[in-house]
Amino acid sequence: MDLVIRNAQVIDGTGEKSYTADVGIDGGRIAEIRTEGPRPTGTRTLDADGLALSPGFIDMHAHSDLALLRDPDHSAKAAQGVTLEVLGQDGLSYAPVDDRTLAEVRRAITGWNGDGSDIDFDWRTVGEYLDRLDRQGIAVNAAYLIPQGTVRMYAMGWDDREATPEELDRMRQLVAEGMEQGAVGMSSGLTYTPGMYAKDSELSELCKVVARYGGYYCPHHRSYGAGALQAYEEMVTLTREADCALHLAHATMNFGVNKGKAPDLLALLDGALDEGADISLDTYPYTPGCTTLVAMLPSWASEGGPEAVLARLEDDETAEKIRHHMEVIGADGCHGVPIEWDTIEISGVSDPGLASCVGKTIKQSAEMRGEEPWVTARRLLINDRLGSTILQHVGHEDNVRQIMKHRVHTGGSDGILQGFKPHPRAYGTFPQYLGRYSRELGILSLEETVAHLTSRPAARLRLTDRGLIREGYRADLVLFDPSTVAAGSTFENPRTLPVGIPHVLIDGTFVIEDGKRTDVLAGRSVRRTAA
Image (tube, rainbow, N blue to C red; front, side, top):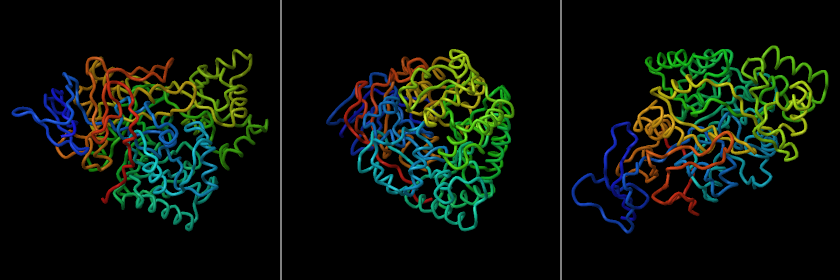
């Protein structure tokens, strides 16, 4: 065989108790698992010496759409043991597009992925984007969700109105083409413009197309704050009526209004599951969220796209209306909750000249300048051309722990890699699950934790040869030390790599070896197979 891993503590992804075995790899696949009898032999032998061997981790919510092309190393994910990322999240990404839409979406999510000035955007369709990943070669595998907000932008611009029959037909066509070209489903960002302008009837029609191809719908739903439970229920009802599988993105219960309410969400999901609904969810093992500062604005202030937003911010009378909506009423961009500026920490800016704001809350920066927080926030939005990212400190640890134990839970980093001080989840989600929440806190057993991060997401993605350690499966594998594995990233030093993960393989090839990134680009696009 090409490689034999001896004396491994095999955690096979099923959730069942681990066992010791030799695992043989040949031709990029697991060829033999031997627990007794003659040992397999290979061109190369690696003694695991008691390290745990698990399937590669699947990041169900990634924002590496441009990072995979920009950074061949991509240790942020590879060093965590991630062997597959799901891109195209939150309803905004870079395919399908035309020239106009591409320019607009690049502006809209500069805070997530940079402005793309270092990228050759030589694609327009979903298939062409996936082909680009394959042609260039990438660090880890990648699947793609069709972004509903981008589709709406393509078909009808940034208008806050119902789609005409012709526009809805165009959106159906774009979704169908994307699915045929290999997308695994569709995402939405229903607190982001222009996707949030879509009514349930419009979303349902697109979900019916997704369902026809055996895909799933992944909404960032309409609120994670005020009305969060109703927003979850809306998505459950919508997808059941459309007969479409549902995967709830970063399924949190945030803000003061939702403290202690995780059981309410889980009861809602259990009821639907018991009635036959096809539902899964992902979370990250941290309390703060991460997004862009402009996302906090009310939706009416964002109609028309980035240039229209800037024009409103620069107009004193309109800016005052925006402030009142955010601070007094509670903007839909801030999940219906009046904004608390001491929870909004700037994590990144597009203009390096504004770097002094990073690591401070809006309230702290305002106090240093002797002005009201909105004055500081408004100036930053204008001067950074809407490119600022934030950490939003509004989560609850009890909710995080209860949701991660649920029977349909999977792991997703929601990792934004941009900014001077990104959220540590981008570099630490998977070792954080294994180290802090499994070994230290005992929220889940190690075997259960691995199942949440491997076989469960593989089942959602309908992958029949990944997510388990089984003969014939792809050799996407992680060797880690259960006694030391931990996230190195912190809020103070977010780009620190994890410890205790010495080896990561994709298709039987080392992408991390002895704790160091190799020069191998083993990743490829993972495309939807026939339902």
